[in-house]
Image 1 (cartoon, rainbow, N blue to C red):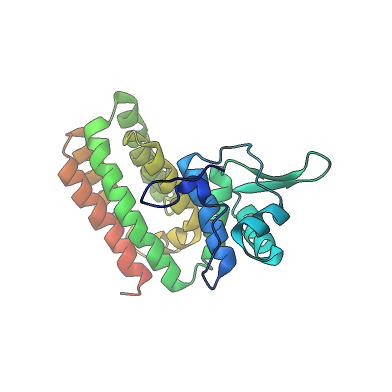
Image 2: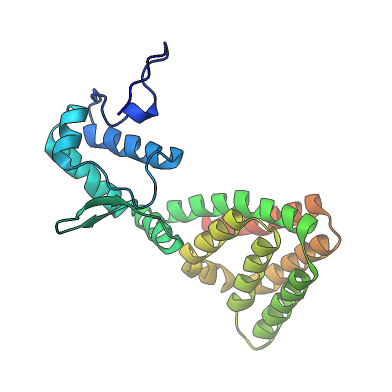
Length: 245
């Protein structure tokens, strides 16, 4: 790899040839490889140098390299192929894999559920604001259908879980931000059981339905600040329930 002769030292092209001096060596190897993937120096389908070559260029043991490669494979960033043309190859991390990784980070204890709802409050309040600015006619149709579905579920003696999920997905989609939509879907799936528990509390389904209607009203009016405020109120109630308040 070419060296950078400038006064700032080596560029990112030297990340796989500069000796590592940190204590947790394998983490630094992971960090360097992920950085190169992020910057485009390593692209989807590229083969990483062999373990022995990485060990020599980084000045670390092969066991550290092997541990780093295992971590990257578990995270879904690389895949190992066997045979003459085998090795470790950069791969794309899909939605399902990312969701699986996040789920493995949380055992969904009470504290982790509260943490996830805090993230929802950040993601979904912004989604509601953008939805008010960017919603299309078809989004309004789906939001109205979600409200009707939840009403029918509650009238039938259910808690409205399908309507609730449809509503939040529709708001995220109306934001016209694919990252927000994917994050919302991921978070929704991760707390599905706890959402069901929350909606099963007396009076909560009816209150959630009213809050949904307020959010839809603000989105229809194109009022982003009001939509954001109502979404925050809605999720804050779930947050307080998760804390046992």
